[in-house]
Structure formats: structure tokens, C-alpha cells
Length: 474
Image (spheres, rainbow, N blue to C red):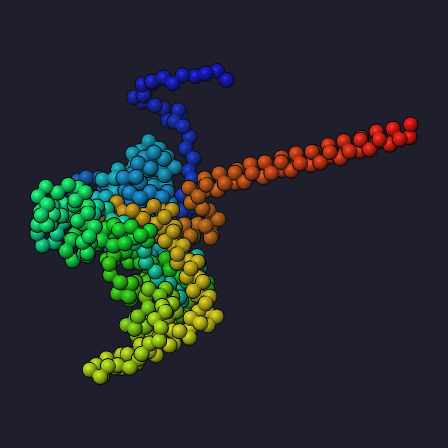
């Protein structure tokens, strides 16, 4: 092969279509488009989003089907930002075909994607998410009887160094400098400010501080122990025996609000999505008749109020109970009669929950919680690259997360019904398969070498023994 040199070539002004390179569509995205087309996805979202588009002549709008496919690509390709989605679509011909663009057409830029997201409201994104759940129900992938709930934190697109006081708007560094001067340090250095800040208590109080660019983000400790401005995402996952771990609802909420305060809202969202499936006559018989009748959570959700609320909602609870030691269920003398009755109701609900989680079914559901519930966070936010957000304000984040998780549900459908994994996973699988073949070949080669050495040693010993026997005979 001769050595070639790279040359700067002027791009032609016109090119014949016969000279265009052939473009192959990706089999995974072809299957996704076939599923969406079979369920009339584009006519549905066009009728749903028509009210957000103007009839007058203006800036060319992005078709709703293209917009929602762009956000699905964010999950399938593991892209965290809308700018990254736009760059990836413009760089890949197969993704352009998935969006419905010709090979010579320009795919949407990130400003068009973000503007379309701002114009379409959150309720419409919720309806699209519920429509994807209907697609899964049509393929018998949703049971709906048991709902598992858990939450995680997502790092906000806001820095701690930019926080200001809620009362005065004073920056954090200016606040520390003023404290240092009050303590007698006229010209404090950065070391002095760091030393002074280290000794302060409750320095990250959300009642006193906020980020002016994203007031919804709150200072909290992340899963890895670091402190950031963050939001909380709570998942409701299908844990029924006939289910496969589909996410039934996503609730993006305040990061510092306790799990016991958001559980009922998440369960209600999941119940509403299941109700839309039941109300649709085409898929109403695809889920369990006892839909939304059981709840499985971890011990962070256990409290007297939650136990009593779940009982009033007619939900069988399987909530892991923290070790609180011996509990007293006697109300104080100063408590009202209603408070005493509430305490007794909480006692009965707690004892019933305790009996259920110790049974065989309770243990099986807790195992499914560890298998499916935690997996949804890993796929959506770790490999799905949404642990670090690139949007601000909770409504914008909720819109992106909803369609991102809808991509998780569609990926579940592709894997279970068509045997197709995400394109990135396919490339990784091919790499690991080649690596396993190479490792097996090396082991086989080493084994052959050991066998050859053994055969050579045996042959030399036979030759030596033959020589010795010949000498003795002589």
C-alpha cells in the first residue's frame, strides 16, 4: 500500500445525487420508528401540540414528532444536553433518517429544540409519556398491580459559588469578607475566609441562600457525599409479577423535601397514568385488574403519617421499617382525641406492614425492588448521562426528564420484544465479544504451549531411558 498525503480540498458547489455516499439506517432506530408508526405516534403528538404553533407565517417550526424524537435520542445515545443532541444529529446521517430528514437536509439546531421545549407545556409532555406507556401496555409489558417508589438527586445547572442571600442579595464571598472584618481581620485573605467559613454552622441553609439563576435548586448532599445545588427525581416503577420494570411516573421535586412528603404525589401520578391505560378500550385488558393496589418502598419512606395515608388510600404497603427500637403507642395526656385515634391507626398500619414484609411475598417484592427500581436510576441517569443537568427551572427539567424516561421505556420494549439493544450498547457488546475471543485465543495458545512442553519433556525422558537401557544391554 502506497503512502498517501492529506490535502486541503475545496468543497464543490454542486454535487450529483449519484455521487452521494450511501447511507445505512440503523436497525435499532428503524425498529423504533416502525413501533411509533404502528401506534400513530406522529398524528397523536401533532394533534396534541397544534395549539402551541402559530398559523401565521414566521420562523419555521419544528415538527412535534421530530422534537420528541430528539429528546429520545438523548437517552439512546447518552447525551446530557440539547446542544449535544443537536450536534450528534447533524453529525450522523442515520439519526437524520430517524428524525425524518433527507440526507441533504439540515437537522434542527439546539436553539430550535430548546425554543420548542419552552413553548410546549409540561402537561403535554406528561400526555406523551402516558402514550408511550400505552404502547408498552399493548405489548403486554405492564402489570400495574405493584408500584415501587424511590428517589435520587440530580446535580443542578447552578454553582454554589454563585449563591446569594435571600434577604439582601449579597454574594457568598462578600458575606464572608464582611464577617471577617467584624471579627477583626481588616484585609482577609482567601485562607482567612476559608478558615472562617469552616468553623461556621448551618452555612448551607436553604432558608438563607439561593442561586439567582435557578431558584428551584437547593443545597443538598448528593449520593456520593459531595454537596451541590440539586433537584430530586422520584420514580414509580412497575414491580408486578407480569411486569418488566417499566417506569410508570417521574416526579421532579424539591431536593430537600423529605421522601415522606413526596410519596403520595408520585403514587397519584402513577395511578393517573395507569387510569389512562384502563380508560383506553384498546389496551384496558392488558394490565392487572388490581392495578395500583400495592406499594413497595425503602425505609426512608416509613413514618406514621405514611402508614396511615397508604391505608386510607386502600394500598397494601411493603415498606422496609427502620430500626427505631421499642416504640410506645400511648398518646400523651395533653393530646386530643383525634391525635390519639391517629396514633392507634398508625400502629395498626405499621403492624400490618411489618407482617407483610416478613412474609414470602414481601421478601420477593423487596428483591424485585432492588432489581428493577435501582436499575431504572442507573439506566436513566448514569448510562443515560442525566446525573448532571444542563437546564434550569423545574418545569424545564421535568419536561426533559419525562421524555428521557420515556426513552427508557421504549428501550425496554426494543430489548424484550425485538432483541435490540441501544446502539451504544451494541458497539460495546461487539467490543467485549472481540475481547472475549482474544482472551480465549490467548488461553488456548498458552494451553497448547503447556501441552507441547509436556510432550517434549516426556519425549526427552523416553529418549534418555532408551539410551540408558541400550548402554546396560551392551
